[in-house]
Length: 155
Image 1 (cartoon, helix red, strand yellow):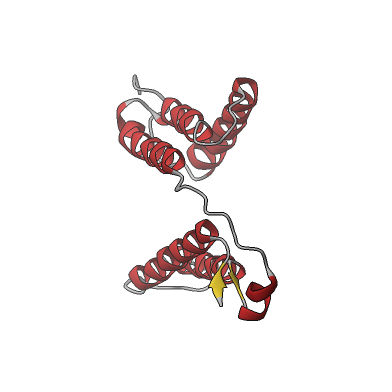
Image 2 (tube, helix red, strand yellow):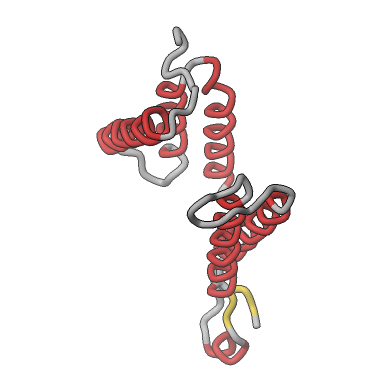
């Protein structure tokens, strides 16, 4: 057996690890039931889903030795430093900015920065995606769940 796609394998392992960590951490909270969810219900279910999907992705990145013998050698791809840097920067900026500059500007910055992590960047697509993401997120988290997050820096 050998790994045919290192990026997929490590992405799957990362999701598996985060899912297991979420399950581990949520074990300290009451679980509840589906009709009366406790504080540990959602992180446990989400962690389980992440662990299962991560396992599937990691296993698909591994090929059996019989397939590996007949397959042509995989070309090594360079590590995606640009994507790692831009995604990390976007998440850090969003986390820092939600309370300081507001939910909407932080989400807009997150969308633009993470879209720049890809190989192509179309400003029209990014703006449309930003507007749809902001509208959906404000509808769900601000008006639906009623999270007390300021929309803009002027509160």
